[in-house]
Length: 352
View 1: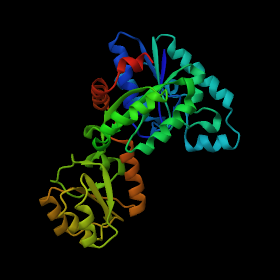
View 2: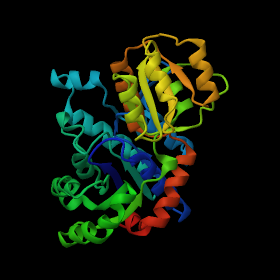
View 3: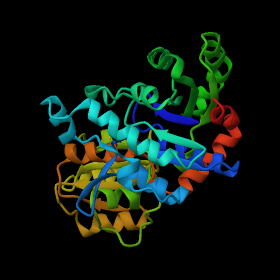
View 4: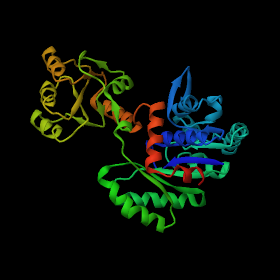
């Protein structure tokens, strides 16, 4: 049997869900393989462009498959541009995916496929996740976020798009404020429309955001404070482009936040140190603040990071890191497995 775990948008927990299901199937005695037909989370590794998710799958599932087998299509910006120019053959791509899939599936009882990006990623070469499901005869588990009732429009549109390939929906990272209404109102509504719901997984702080240390590493930032802890969790950013008084008023209303501002904005930086919800100061432009300010930050246990880029560029990069969630590792998959056991029907997903 083949399952394809996909989503309506990026950064919804597809990887953690897919690998958790793969581990659950292995615990049931199945031989399990993994494949991400379209690599979209790209990084450089030994001079090659690779997706991070198959690398994690090899580690978590102890697979022998090579990365190029698990990721037959590298859906990079260069690939997209070449496809637009007519230099990528859709039929050849389909044959490549099928060949690699069949090679890995031969010695398995179940294949777990992970979608790339969003549900419609790959449409430019006729390889949306619906197309992949049809090509490889897969049943789809749709992972979706939920914050308000209007989000269901997107779920219904996705269900119509997937048609008979849809096995069901898994709501993930549901905030506390929306959890009860989702379970009591939305789930019965969807099931009344013929859309099966596998579970409603609450937002888990352990899987949300990134730590200060992780952010510093991803941004290549200098850590200017030596004593302030860097294990604080960041879930949002506030840009300090206002006066010190305005900044303090805004920062007092947030938590688990990083202030992004120019390193020369000493007034805003000083004000931020008075807000309990600020976990980190991310200073831009390469401007190092006075030592007195750094001393106050050390005393307040607020780490200070410094980057050379401008504020807008830094904000864009930082938000992309946040959207991608915590650094993906075995712990992430283990925690998602616990959440699925508590809040979802794993047997139904594996037998969908």
